[in-house]
Picture 1 (cartoon, helix red, strand yellow):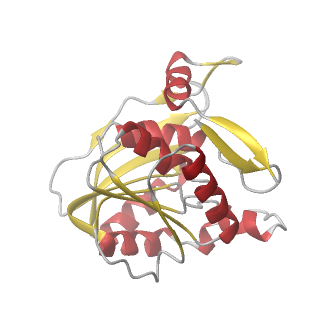
Picture 2: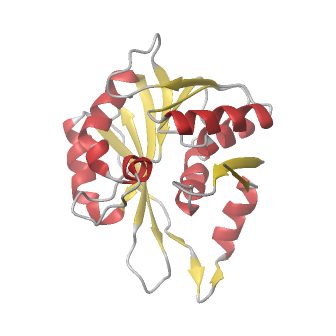
Picture 3: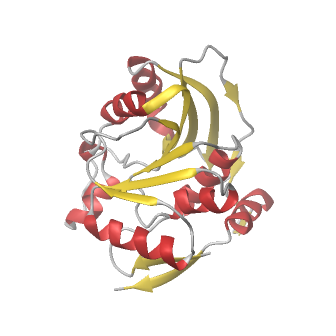
Length: 230
């Protein structure tokens, strides 16, 4: 699949590939919402793999809405695309499945002067607790929320999920290499679940200077190709 992206500004990274692979393992069905969809890569890859889902994608930035629409149409996939603030938007339905690659860099991190990049990267524009509270309100009973976050903030993730009455059911850590600390964590949380959490085998991205076999498999499965667009 081809995905148009702006040459300058926010561009998707390998994080979304690992999140896509994690999300698809739960075989989403029904109504699916991609929050902060950016160019639409996460939601559209899931729609390709699970054609029966009813996909909605939303983003607060009009520049991203333009890309999501372009990528939806160029890949001939059906999706409703909504421009708005997820924490304030009133949907006419609840969702079986919500996915998101949210901004998670800490507010104390040195910030880019580009306003679009700030909104896409920094958690003070969408705090985790605010996001999770809105997810809870928009999920059906037993609905799932799959997202990725900074692994170093795992304590905050657990606290935010507990506060929002969301039960963490699956966790997978992503490591740059086997001798480095995890920088990314993939989370599957459910509304009204009592199941124990499952800790999945970790994903290592690099083996010395090359991608690991697992990482290559994920990138091949996604089959995405980026095209610059002004």
